[in-house]
Image 1 (cartoon, rainbow, N blue to C red):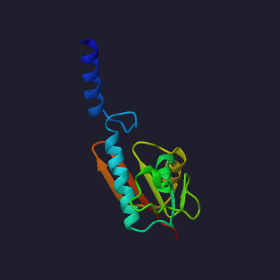
Image 2: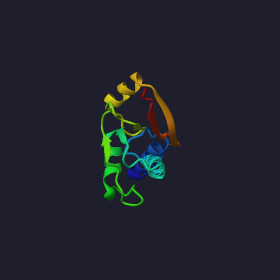
Image 3: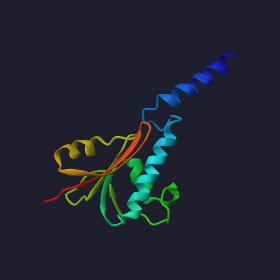
Image 4: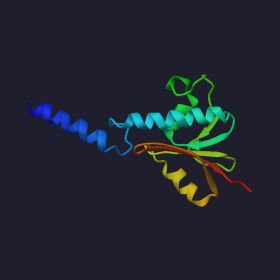
Length: 130
């Protein structure tokens, strides 16, 4: 009886208190927004553009077996930091890259696309180069 109450409470708590973690039932929302972002990048043919993002999104973009890429074609220039030739930056609610977050504050960027589902979000920025 006590274990049943604990399980029910845990499920109810995690489904309503999602903070962007991949150890939470709400992670399905993160997967949704990340899939939408990958689909957007594929539709815009960003395969050869320089993209900076966090570790998990980098893996999603460069490994077809991740299950996110619709046609098996990979993104060829994805890094975990913003370089002098980086064109785009992807950030997500489930993983923060401190280096990228600090660099974003010093650059001129424009938000191109944002997907949200409940507390999960994924943003694509373009870097405005002079």
